[in-house]
Length: 367
Length: 262
Image (cartoon, rainbow over all chains, first blue to last red; front, side):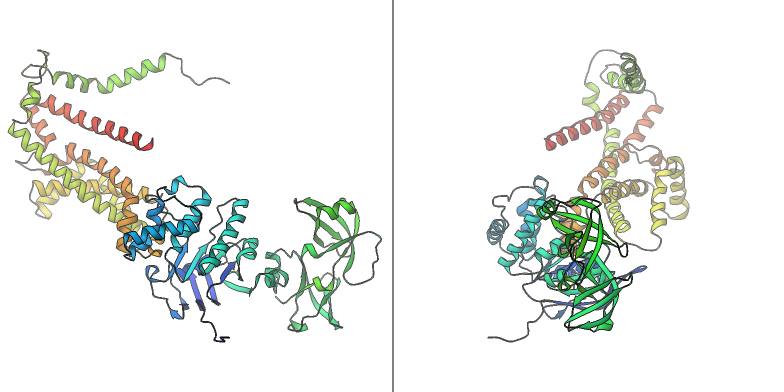
């Protein structure tokens, strides 16, 4: 079995990019393994698109290095870098047919005409648009244009494919379908993807590794289940939907559990995490779907049990989002119940309930 | 809901009267260009005689040649300069670009008489430019350049510039991107500016009159000079052509556009 360290397909070392009045990318470093989908996730303005443009060559770094296949590419213009971009606007050439668009990159490389035609045909098959060579971009639907944009980049077999929120303009159903297709295509061609998005669900669905960005810096990098189940900072927890955040400090630890006291005075219990020192802990977060609701009068003993009153119930189709006000501190807890559970328990607004979650569900935050 | 129609019959009547007021002199000119009268001011019977003889008139031939040459050179030069300037002003940031943009407007907002007189003084006192083709060309290009500049700038604001980035991303050098992507996208604006500049240059009188000097005549100046000697049918025929040619061109463009949209 081979045991050599994989050369990262893409690497950023301490990259800084400034614009007048703002640091868009603030000493960012990461590595992307070949053949993986790496997702830059974050809210608008966090610097993820700028980072992507730095890799593509449309902006130049102020400090640090961008390496593709272990070679520094800082000064290499976009048309000489071995990466292709799928733009947010798709940027299909309106004055050319689909075939013209797909052939453009190959023509620049002086590929023979019949070879071009063959590869265009194959690529259209890959993205499930056979026979569309002579259509114009204006004659295509949103999803079709999306696929042509992908095909136009993939046909050049780049080392890295850069995607800038490519599914943003699609409606929800189409977006979900395209996410699946995107992943399938990636698995088929084996090209490394660098994907930028603000949609957590999209990142969770697509990525092999997610890097959450905020104000030009990486907050947390890890596999999707890591980022989702164990966010390390308040920002990441909140961004990934763990909207129950309790700032606090550790006051005791025993039997593999730690006790925290929150700023508001609640006593919470969490499972111990061996890699984190008690002094570093700044609070815990809990995902809404991990919180149980018990009817009033249930046993109050045990970890993480608090009485509260249901403020509102918002129907979401597959689940019901409940807002509960804790009696002890007045904090608002968000809880997701499946529609069936809610029906069985016959909860309604104003009812008094018992909020409960297991110490294993308490996620420890350090930032 | 009260209807906004202005009394059913009144509007068409007023419209017809306005159009008549605007066009009657021209219509009369056109009608009399077909008259056999030697002076072209009375109706003496239908004839195409004057049209047939038009090109045999040496004066007309020379003037026509000059007008067309000047217009074509102006159209090409002004459009090229305008396109380059528009691209530079839009895509780059440099000191003085605001002043450059304002300065480019000057030739159009200055009264033509002032421009013509200023240029004449300039050619004769400051920088010796021979009066004739050189002076006329410089004057025409100076005036047409802003037209091209602003038409193309306007179009540039509606173009998706990530298309240029996409082209570079796919391996095209800057020159290739310019050739294959930018120019085709700018083409409608370039055509529009050509269609503005050619007729203007062809029919300009004021500025050309100041800077053309003795012995060089464009067609409008020829018509003017002919009128000094009294009315002749030449004026009518040339006038009709001046009106008919752009009209036909516009109808043709309209027809072609309609066909492309279908």
